[in-house]
Length: 145
Image (cartoon, rainbow, N blue to C red):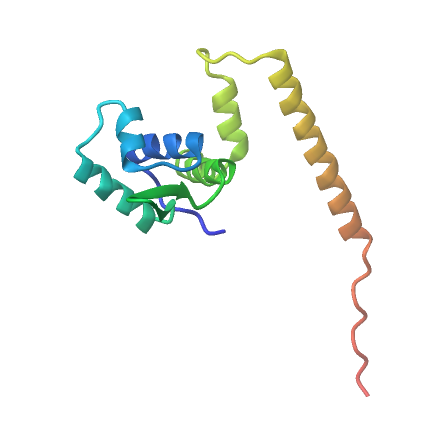
């Protein structure tokens, strides 16, 4: 899927609520948002989110319901990819190093083990792929008659 456009702080707040609930109405959002905008301003934000491809709506009774177009994890991958490209010149290693070296962050032993195991599985996968590519024989050149 193509990368979705970036979100403003207010749009992220709306999407957090939509992801948490699965489907929302304008009334739902107004009751859950911190310092909610006016009803008409919120409708405008929802239209912008639809135009950006983040939301779709349907009608339920007298109200529109809004739901995400993609899963939260997929949206997160898209946002993370954008951040890595923007702030770390596309380097996952630099991004991970910056995150793990943050003195204010703390990680459980389980999180660190999980990260380590994931990296090791990717390393093995990469080695297998590289190995299989190097053992393939190139096609023989056609002989001239």
